[in-house]
Amino acid sequence: MKYHILTWGCQMNEHDSEVLSGMLEEMNYTRTEKLNEADIIILNTCCVRENAEIKVFGRIGQLKHLKHKNPNLIIAVCGCMTQQKGVAEKIAKNFPYVDLVFGTYNLDNFPELLQKAVQSKTTFIEVLEKEEKIIENLPVSRADNLKAWVTIIYGCNNFCSYCIVPYVRGRERSRLPKEIIKEVERLAEKGYKEITLLGQNVNSYGKDLKTEIDFSGLLKELNKINGIERIRFMTSHPKDFSDSLIFTIKECKKICEHIHLPVQAGSNKVLKMMNRHYTKERYIELVEKIRSEIPECSITTDIIVGFPGETEEDFQETLDLVEKVEFDSAFTFVYSKRTGTPAATMPCQVDERIKKNRLERLMDLQNRISKQKNQLLKGKTVEVLVEGYDKSKKGKLFGRTRTNKLVHFDGSKELIGRLVNVKITNPKTWTLDGVINQD
Ligand code: 5AD
Ligand code: SF4
Image 1: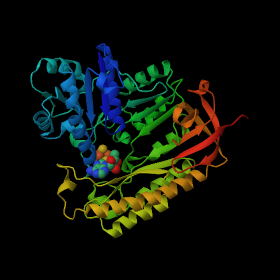
Image 2: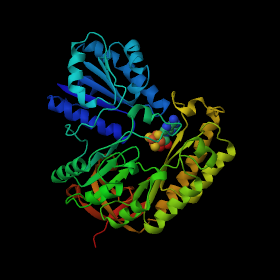
Image 3: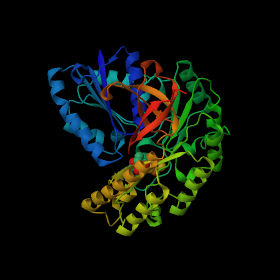
């Protein structure tokens, strides 16, 4: 029996798919890359922006012919989209050949739900309304054998006014430090070299626990684990980024010098409407503090254009901030109305054409800055964790710098999994070319 999982959205979702894979493999399913070979297809969905949702519905529609060819095929839909009001019922109505719909709070129940779905003649739906307690020790089948995602906190308490996440992922729940440490120790034993700690807001880690530990404290513990060479984390909310965290990153050798710090907008009026709890000035101050303590640190961000009420002047302030901060790179988004969030009903929604135009101008600016920043690395030697062999680039190796920049270089496959020094010869906008330093 074979399975195939389609995943949309963030690393959190990617990691949930790794857990689903783990459970399926325990049930003796094996992974297949080919949809038409699969006995079960799972669609792990995202609803953070409307276009992700449109893609999912389109994809479910495309699966109809496979079900027609193989009536025993099981089709399941899970993830953030299913957690929204009415979506599960809409799927069952419009795509009755879907066997199972389940939400984000009952992933651990998947084997049981699958059994119920097989027995049910109609679409079996189980979407819980509220988060449950964290279930540990679920099987995980990871997509990579060098780098691993480790969730440290589930959910979000921030309620940024545009964002659907708090409604579909629930309130913040931190995993116990001992569970996280145990998981990372096991990963090290298996030969993993890099971990990325995941959470919608990792800086809130521990606030909901009885144990006296915060995110810095957790990082310090993980930094002690032999075998792990690199520690990354995402995402950080600027309002919760403490001085102690800056010093922890500076002190702990394994913590990589890269911070993903979504700013979202550069106008204080828009930031307030977004419910972000910081000003442009405070954000810039934070970046300056980070750079004064960790000069080599790369800083990346997320930016939304066309939030309701955003005027040309407000947008200009975003451009000014981007110019001033000089992000290494940025994920840029057009504001997407999410039903149920406060921003969806705010007046002065911005015209789609204006949004697109702002996005293009922002991307042009950021691309110019990314290229300039990468140019500074020309001739420099940087540490790269060799991750793999890129067939499309005529046998080149690839890996990432500590600052999370992708580097291509010639070398033998034996180097995969090792840290090597690479001299950057040709920096580009999104990637760097280099040669292994022989000295
Ligand atoms: N519209 C556009 N972008 C959004 N994001 C979250 N919600 C929305 C929305 N409604 C972006 C934010 C966040 C990233 C993961 O997705 O920039 O940081
Ligand atoms: Fe959404 Fe804001 Fe929470 Fe991030 S911090 S998940 S943008 S509500």
